[in-house]
Length: 377
Image 1 (cartoon, rainbow, N blue to C red):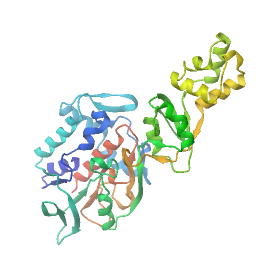
Image 2 (cartoon, rainbow, N blue to C red; image 1 turned 135 degrees about the horizontal axis):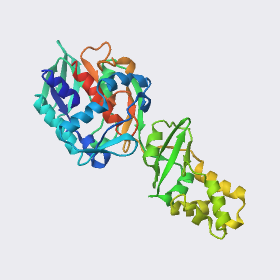
Image 3 (cartoon, rainbow, N blue to C red; image 1 turned 60 degrees about the vertical axis):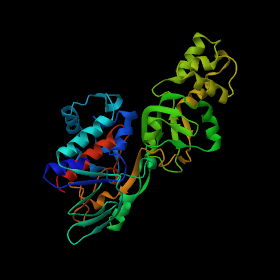
């Protein structure tokens, strides 16, 4: 949609073919229906790719501030949440409506509920086979997204187009997705389902300080979704349920001040009460703080702040917010998003091997890469 607007404003004759019944459905459902449309902290370090610097050209040429300016001109009110995340004050459908209005003003034609079954080279440009018939075009922009959330219509069609034209791919996998665990570890987590805590999750050298949510299937919440993009099978993650706190010191202080209280009572001042009771039971602690040695209290602190877990997998594309991997950036011109060696064929957005952090980064990549392609198609 964004590439179409830019191309249409340049006087190009533009057709957008969408196999879904409505345009911008991922925008509509994003951010709890309020669309986390960008982030104030856009930087190359917050994107995953074989070549993270590939995204820089597009991100610098059409920035988060440029998209914010468009929101302001459209009269769409917004606010900043934590960590630079920007959301609509009202419904995400306002963003969809803005894009549709801009498309219409630019003379862009939109075919909804129209599947594309093939893209081939024509005598001049390309021939695109659609449910409404054959379309001939000088340029084709593939903006099909990835495999994430198939119930929204996501498919691997864009990857098949790339392979057909000899454009290499980086292996794809679910990103920004809840992690799952084996029965032994899951048995510990299931009683805590629904408990959320501000925590820290690390995998190797990467860590995120955000909310962690226990579920019936494992762990979710922003910190888990973030680390899932870095996690690989066979790697452990370390969970800290009280980051930045001296848990051992606080427990020893509580023992000195009120030694007759139970561990769960003192621990509930640091973590949610349900979690405090669960840690106490799991460690087999009974009696009062006064009966616990300093070493035992330090053991409790280690459980709270250094819990090593071995995920066995993730919930997959069904709930993944993005798809990691995709069209290899080495095969694209970062200034235009055109495929090298295939003049007139462009790949933008999630279908490319560029994946942002949770928090508006992937939308900004969509706007920026779309804008870049729209200047040249």
